[in-house]
Picture (cartoon, rainbow, N blue to C red):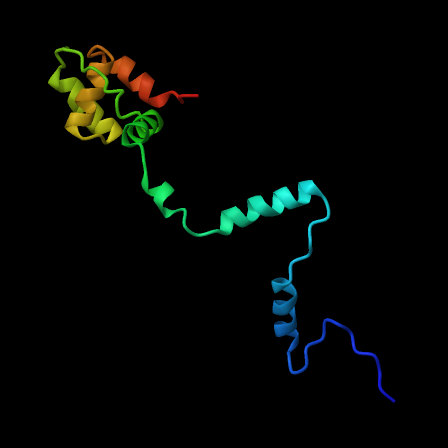
Length: 124
């Protein structure tokens, strides 16, 4: 007696190969919306988009990067005379380098107390 064989069984194929065969056969889209979605998905996988991807507006890219990373926001360094003792205090207490301590003091008008408070307060 012969039994009816299912239609999706391929002779000699393992279960992994049968899964591959099922993936290769795509179901037919039933509605217009399904067909549009399927066409959009197939465009994503399509090759040949290299020429469109090769055209980059360098000015727009540079503007976007500068907006993200803030490269155009250079802070003006104030012309403030900084006391060497204040620099030494920040270097010793905060373990800063001398240029970093000097920069912090200049940002706070050379006042060591303001500089220390600003560094220690959390910047929410």
